[in-house]
Amino acid sequence: MVNTKNIRKSICEVGKLLYDRGYIDASGGNISVRDGDKIYLSPRQSGEHHQWTIDEDSIIVTDMCKIPIIGELNKITRESVSHYYIYNAFPEVKAIVHAHPPFMMSFGSAHMDIPAVSEGTRCVIGTLPITNIEESIPGSSQQAERVVENFNQRKKIDPECGLICSIPFHGIFSAASDLNYAFLFVEVSEINCKILINRQIMFGNNPKADLSIHHQITREEINSIGQDKEACEIGFKYRDPFGNETVYQGQKSPLASNVSADLISKITEEVLRKLKNS
Ligand SMILES: [Zn+2]
Image (cartoon, rainbow, N blue to C red; front, top):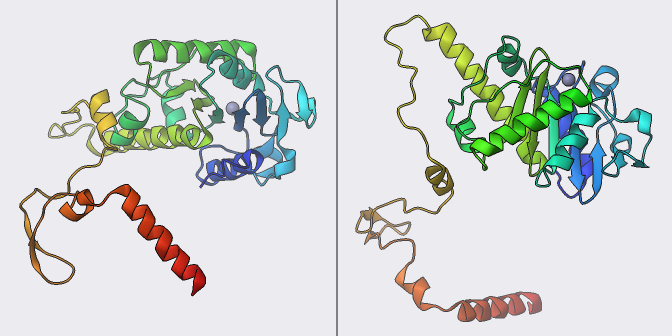
């Protein structure tokens, strides 16, 4: 669970989580969060020197141009340029993860795009394949520009897609509306790659294997997933928790629909008052 109220703590927690799950390694990976006009960043070499057991006080806070507010300039992650470029290009982005997930990197180290196949990936980041930027010098403004260009291309095709891209032989960048989602993009994409690799190993040469997607999930269908739905058809006969044979009337029981919100709040207040006085 990410503590979004305490940004510095949440960066430490997500860093450890990414490290423990093997999405970042001792050689690299970094995290940042935007809060208003401030950027919070993980310190450099968090993996190499600390195996991501880092202290909240080590998180550096700067303005939008990397001028330190808390912490020292030379302690900021070496990949910070890409983080600032992304924040300045996409106002909606509030958190960024740069990771080294090995299954995603297996595609990147062959310059191959990653098709979205798992339900999680297609629903969370969309149906667009995750594509590679050109091989770039790590930590450079060249890399930063290419990541921003990749994200712009994605948004041009699908404005609602998740922002994630691969850097060949190096890793990935994920950018989202909060740190939960920046983490989620990495996790669903890495699992998606595990599935692709596993099914290739298991069924790649089996003519009986059908690797095609039979139903392309539309944006409308994705948006409908969270909507409340009836679990049973109206008229369904069942036994209620008191052992009575009953007929399902729908989520809105006749009693509930006849009771006003005002009356419910009056009853609640009365019960609370009695509890207080008892
Ligand atoms: Zn890296």
